[in-house]
Image 1: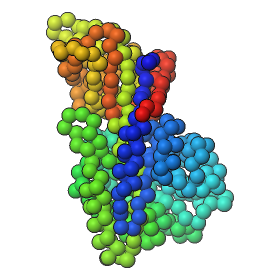
Image 2: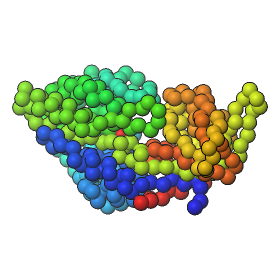
Image 3: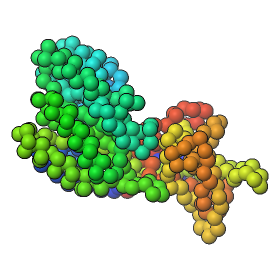
Image 4: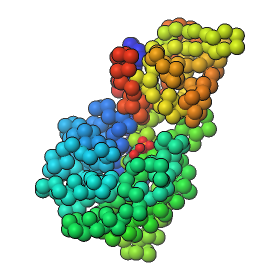
Length: 374
Ligand SMILES: Cc1ncc(COP(=O)(O)O)c(C=O)c1O
């Protein structure tokens, strides 16, 4: 079969769908798929068929979901850029989350808009495995800074609007106690919005891709969330529905990028041996921008190993599959099976933010094809 290609495991995705749908929260749970992680149409239809809801990060994603038959009521839109077609999306039932005061004003001014809306607040707390994936705190432009909550409430009051959904996404992590602190902070913010009935904590539930990375245990996290939501209900009488919108957790493990070693070059005795693949940042960018680590396997039977730097085919020194963890500026050779030109290479856990986040078209290389496999 042709390389480069992405293969997505239907069974792997189904397992995650079943697992997440089994979680139980005291006052209800809505599980949304963060479609930006991987909008491959067969993944969307699997999610939709299983009753999963959706988180869209742009009005274009929301429009695409509608075109694929997802009802608007199942889609929540929280985007950095103002929607290009807000009126049409609202007419079709898409749930809107304003992520800035300007977006709130645009919503208020939209003819035929609903009487209620969600807002995304940046509560000054951020967790991510690196600075680029933390979406809260003073360095993040996501959401309305918490000090502007009085302005948000005043604007809603003036427009006769009910703010019934609160959205706070503050980055990724695996530690249940960190998620406990996230919920504590979220509930402090909820307390300031008397009409909120639904709290959306975003995605960011970590998976183990390589080395010492720790996978989130969603059952433990849900247990902590449940305790905190029950305590809040006891104190305030407010029973909050929880929403989560994982992308990575749903699909990361289900993807494999399959490539071929096009060439092997070296920089002499004091240098490195480079495996040049027939794919690169135009198909897979995470390592080049985050220093993200993925397991890589050379598909042959060799019992011998070599120390290799695995690089992409783009004319760019940053086009790298084996950076130092978290530091895309530096290379970290990997011990892999002794490789030859023409060997297949598999890069694992590439189902999320890989095909969807590539530098498409760079060097005019064609896209790796995507396939659903059993
Ligand atoms: C608003 C929102 N929801 C959900 C997600 C999904 O996060 P992840 O794929 O890490 O679960 C993100 C990621 O940045 C996000 O910004």
